[in-house]
Each structure stands twice: as structure tokens, then as C-alpha cells.
Length: 257
Ligand SMILES: Nc1nc2c(c(=O)[nH]1)N[C@H]1C(S)=C(S)[C@@H](COP(=O)(O)O)O[C@H]1N2
Ligand SMILES: [Mo]
Image (tube, rainbow, N blue to C red; front, side, top):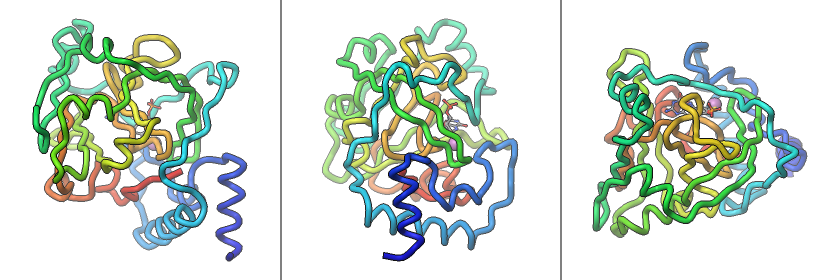
């Protein structure tokens, strides 16, 4: 085993969080808009993937923490108030008219109201959020497992990815934040759609009314302000074809931690 891998292993064991390479890359806060050097990025990605293959199974559970570990103020990042009049109108009305559309390669497309989602069996987990910028934050999240929502729409066998389309417009106003995960991550027992943070209704800052939470991937994968979920066979047709807003700026698609 090379030195590099053993450094990576120590980081994982110590729970330092963001991957070794990511610390070199600067922020994922779009306002900072740092230029990414493609070569530094791809070598870091190679390292991350190789280390993951060696050290951890993608299906392993992320550590859970206790109430005492919860950060007094959860750190916010990226969009904190979508610049979208339709979204703002929904927020003003307590999201009573918000509907989550779930469609694509499914047997039974459907729309869920917030009450529909709140009436499903929910999971509460205290997990650590790791941002590619190098900071981490522990919070308690509550919501149904994504796999329970998908069970209601019945994915077709051709479905390979779950796309998340968000309410916040990015940069020039024509593109919205979006993300994607594969069916294996969608089925993970810590993949949930959260409507509460630390026991309170999810505030707009953190992605109201519903945001994705993953146990084993970096913060940018966890779409806030989710409006529409679509099951697809490929993420290539969306955005610039890399599977998500930050992936289109050069970040890795599988952002494992
Ligand atoms: N819709 C949307 N989702 C998003 C982002 C965003 O800007 N818009 N930022 C991502 C990034 S980079 C991080 S670290 C987390 C931040 O979540 P938080 O504000 O709850 O800390 O949300 C992710 N999901
Ligand atoms: Mo992030």
C-alpha cells in the first residue's frame, strides 16, 4: 500500500472528512467562483476513487452522532434564498401548494404534497455534513427514505439514476441547481428526503421544504429546494451532461466520503 493511500486511510479513520484532494481545490461556494485546474482535479478524483475502492464499501453506514454533537448553528452554503418568484410564493404560503413531482422511468408517476411526505414513516439521523471546501457540520435530519418514495412510483428496470431538479436558478438565470445519484445510493438506508433539521421544520436557508441527505457523499450532492425527481437511464442529456451543477464545473460525480 502506498503512502498516499495510508494517509487517506488515516484521514478516514480520524473522520477528518473531505477528501485529501478536495482541500486543494478551494470552495464550492459559487460566489467564490475559483478557477479549477482540470489536472489537479482529475488526479484528486483518481485518488479518491482508488482509496474508496480499497478502504470502504459504498454501502457501509456513515457514523451517527449524539444530540450533544449537534452544531449550535448549522453552517449554510450555496444558495440560501432561491431567487425565484414562484418558489418565493410557495414559501410565503408555507409550501401548502408545493408539490414534489416524481416521474420518468417509473410505472406510476405521482405528485406528493408536503403532508403526503410528512405522513410517511420517517427516519431521524444525526450525521455529519462534509463540504468539499473542507468544513463539516453535524445536524439531525428527519424525513422519509428516498427508497420508500421510489417504492410508491415503482422504478422501471431501465432506471439507473435519480435526478433532482431544484428551485434555485444559477448564474445566468437560465440554469437551475440539479444533481443525480445512482439507484444504489438511492437505496442506501441513510439516503433520505429531509423536511426537518434539528427537530424544526426545514428553514429556507437549508433547502425548504425538502432536501436530499446522503450519508456517504459530499455536501454538493445533497440537493436543496427539490422540486422534481426524475428517474432516467442516463444523466448525459441534462445540464452540461456531467450529472449535476458542480459536476458541470469539474467536480467528481461520485463524491464519496
Ligand atoms: N439547490 C441547491 N442545493 C445545494 C446547493 C445549492 O447551492 N443549491 N449547495 C450544495 C453545497 S455545495 C452544500 S455544502 C450543501 C450546503 O447545505 P447547507 O446550506 O444545508 O449547509 O448544499 C448543497 N446543495
Ligand atoms: Mo459544499
